[in-house]
Image (cartoon, rainbow, N blue to C red; front, side, top):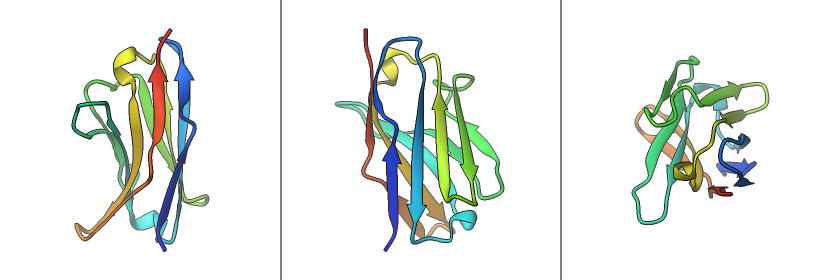
Length: 116
């Protein structure tokens, strides 16, 4: 079955950095568009960053210039390097895999807390 497993979340001070990782299994990873989303308490889930199967990246305005998404097709892994973290970045971060408008998979999420 399809599994997306996130790791790398935790507690970090403002201005700090984290690297989130998502390991995918059960899919033909290289043909999927991959993304990171987040959901803060009381707010809707929002897109943070996406990387297409061809490697094109897009970022939410709130994280552009601070976060970097990348993928390793040999390892079926997508990474999110988050730097310059702010308290507003506190949320559960979810990995997403999507293809052809028909396949849409989610991980269980990893908590990121930015606090002093």
